[in-house]
Image (cartoon, rainbow, N blue to C red):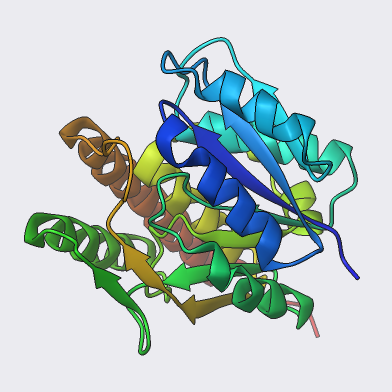
Length: 253
């Protein structure tokens, strides 16, 4: 069986950490857990160390300070690749992503997908207890990204997902500098653009049960700005390539 690592970034997630870790470990015996803590002032990092002491399938990575979701996942990817994991998952620590749905995502990767995304916006997917403004932000962000990037993905912003490790190795991750919302968009688009197989599976997303949301206007604006830049660059490059093909001399016969 393929060994898999579930990365859980944390910053002030002490209240729900024990539950989410134990639920992930119970979801499938092939899943290990990595908590990446950004020096949480509420003691999340110490709690993670205490949990790992009694859970052989759990590892903790401590970082000096809050550096953003994207860089936390990048640090987790580096550890996963260094230790030879074949599958790598992302999941939130706040209870919004149900660990009990991990086997569905795991099966998609084992059946050949290179990236699997837990989708809220496909048949069978849904959100629970989400305020109207969050639904609008998510729908608008997905629609905007699909239009600008020419993506076919129905939930490109979803943070509940899994990658094959060999895909992460083939991507130039040094070019990824996004944080938060836009990090998920950029990573999914990189995989989709590379021609790899991207699968989506319906999930039930539940409004966080512990802690406070890290979503802010700045994160949303960063995502819109980055998507606009990526989209314009991609369209320019595509148009330039077409012009060059048209102007290329016909082959001699």
